[in-house]
Amino acid sequence: MELQDIFALLHPAIAITVVFPLIGVVVNRALLTRQRRLETKAGQKSKIPPVVGSEHVAIGNWLSGSVVAVALLGMAYPIFSKMINNDIFAKEPFRVFFVIAIFLLSVTSFVFLFKTKIKHWRGIFATLTGMGLIILGFQPEVYRRDSEWFVSHYYYGITAALLMIFSVAIIQDIYQDRKNNWRKAHIIMNCFALLLFIGQGITGARDLLEIPLHWQAHYIYQCDFTNKTCPESK
Image (tube, rainbow, N blue to C red; front, side, top):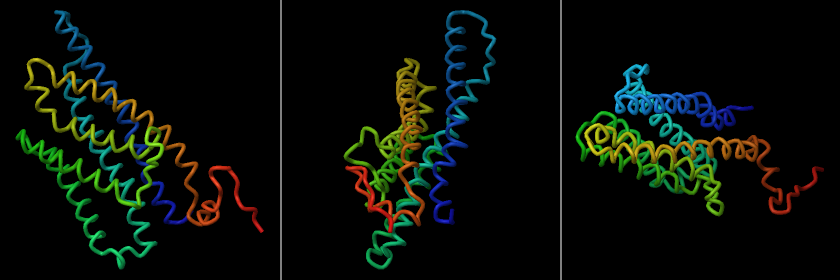
């Protein structure tokens, strides 16, 4: 493999070594937190230490940050590599600077989302981060598999990232809501996110089989994918 192919592997490598282990830890802490809450509510003395709740929040923040970071990285590589190969810097300089600005805005907004405690600012920064991801995802260089969106690695990933952004935005509301409506929304939303992460593992493995090394791409893309035939080598 050459440097270009190594860059292409950064997104799946970080997802496998960082994101998926964090998912397991977060799910474990979520189950323990819920079990302790139910035992305490029933008047029982729980053997689960109180710290599991704060651990769930802290590791959940790490998971949310990692998911959004991996999503940005997964879009950055195809966008900028194809822009360089197609000389988009000379053909569409405004779009290049616009894309760079959106990347910077998305990262900055997400950082501020973790920092702020004020409700309306959390909403603003969450919205800006989500909009940034969507705008970047709809750049022509990003392969979305629009015709098969229901099995698309991109659509699963972008939806999961948006759910993680929303999870960070409502953390304070969960603790302030005595009716537990936000907590229930958080549980439902993240159960759906867990299904998306499973789908990400499946579709990501599939896509790795379909993406050739850069020196093989010219030949591979001459193949007829409908009839599953390739031109014979001379």
